[in-house]
Image 1 (cartoon, each protein chain N blue to C red):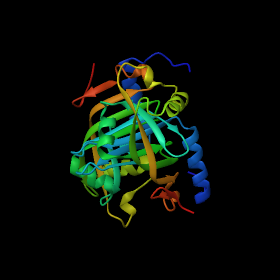
Image 2: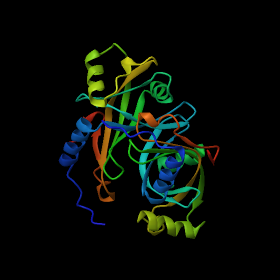
Image 3: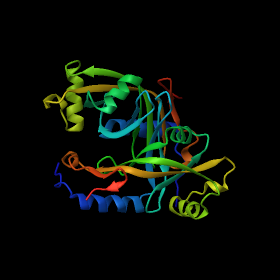
Image 4: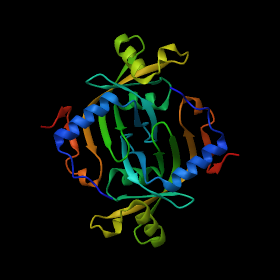
Length: 150
Length: 150
């Protein structure tokens, strides 16, 4: 297999921001207080600062994330990974109509139209890692404590 | 967007088995006893019964999975999902050389050659769900209690 040389940190940051802006789906892992884990794909919107998802308020993902206050999210395929650890804030429907419109436009899905009670969860990145193949494991850390590394 | 009609259960099972046989990577979620979650991509091999991954014995994934005895695994892209919940068994290096050879052949990665102590973790599916778009959420359950549904 012909693996390209590792990207620079600046290139990885640019690629990561492009993925945040243009990808529609992510994987989100969560766990309950007993350490039982959950993993599902969800659609999201990136507003320049945070990723916002919508999920039924009674779903395991919502319950787990609101309990933990933290999320682990993955974007991209397994050979072009962006991993985000972030803080979770809840925005019940009606809190931020502009963000809710942006979510509906980005995902093609508007939970405000449903009978089931959904809620918005906003994940603000604290740590971001990005790599493609094993030769990019070194240097994969792009953001720490919410700040992009130089 | 033009979404095809939902696949039959038989078709989903066939597609799922094909993915298990031919995919190289999966996403694996795990959590510690405090409910802190972890999510990483790993390569795997399917032996007809279980998925086997290899990871450093001291990694969060190994520690979490051995603690919990259960794993949540995702194969495929977010619009062609196979979700597997399974029981985790550890096979330290040397336990099953045939499986170790199969893992190296499938993944292109042989942890037996490394200085760092790796271990093999075998995930035997108990529950499998598969769906593409929202119209396939109904009927996504393909296996329950380790048995394929008819």
